[in-house]
Length: 491
Image 1 (tube, rainbow, N blue to C red):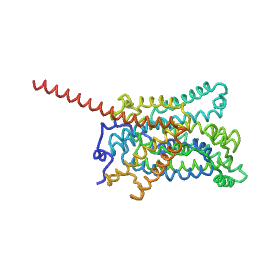
Image 2: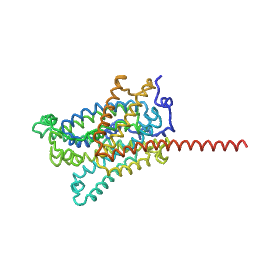
Image 3: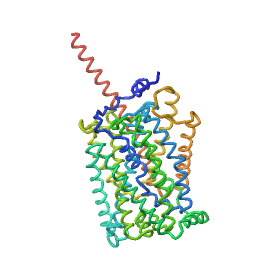
Image 4: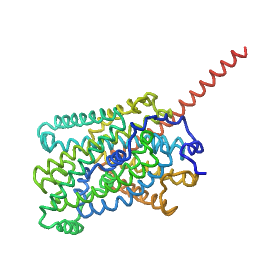
């Protein structure tokens, strides 16, 4: 008889105390369309953030990578998540998957890596938010610093902190409220990019010029750093597993996760390819295709200042929605790890009414505010390396669960048997090997960021060693107290 997720958890080895269940009524849970919107903002949020890719390697190679990346990365990871989220729809998501299959050591490592790349990724969005806001307020731009670069940097950081605080307010209300804002934001962002594409089609003398631009660009040499390019791609195509961490707050997760992932993946491909194609048809200027100019400037070239303002507004909504969704999933990781005894117990405090781990959520916002001082490129590199490592562990968990529990009940199964499973594993592994090659080739400009990654890896081992020692001492203390009570009772 097929096993349910509950019985499967009892059959698999359990390490530490399992995470506390979040018991929410159906009306306070995240529904399917809201879940699809949250996954959209966990992985994409519109084409915002792709601009530096085109600036680094050109329109031709950039569009080619935009089309290839979903096949090598997004689709395999999305299929993996759809199966594992349906099999084990537990609060904590991929931390639970890895803990239950590979053991507590690798579960702790994955949790530590995930929290760090989450902070690195989340810190990107306030930086981009300020960049889009500078379209309306040029004094916020780097070019306006002049003789006061420190004052300008401080002003940008304070604005970034304001954006973080606004997202914190929404997240402290409930996952349902974050999902509702994600639905509205997704509709507005996608609508703005659709308007830009329609204006381009109407005003372009010959839309086929974009095809010629892309074709001719392959003959032009570009000196974009491979590690930076891969990091930008990882930033824009990662996050499919993120939504799994709040599965305990989702309505009918086994049914809704596969459907929501399918919707989000379809929207992602369309909202990346079409705006970039229209944008390169208007301009290939590398200064426009950058994180300091981007879609507002490109849209202004296409349709004038009003269209630039519309895309700047979409960029503000997109980056805020992205941060909102990331904060929702990231805050559940320290909460679950704290309930398992690996992190301070205070992080496990959760609101009985909303299911929100308030201390963990606030802590993430504080740490992210500090990381927002790091430039976009450096944050992308840190996020790319740690995320790629975590995904490798998730893929291994998928294979082991197929081998150990082939008959367990799954609401979705990667199609194609072991051939399909091979495809799901091969694409991300090829990307992982490319990242390792890029690290060996382009490491020099990112020495500090690679050192930060190494520090995180060592810290993960330290968390495991300390947590294991504390647990052992706690068990020893309980045993001693029990022996004392028994001795007194016997006397």
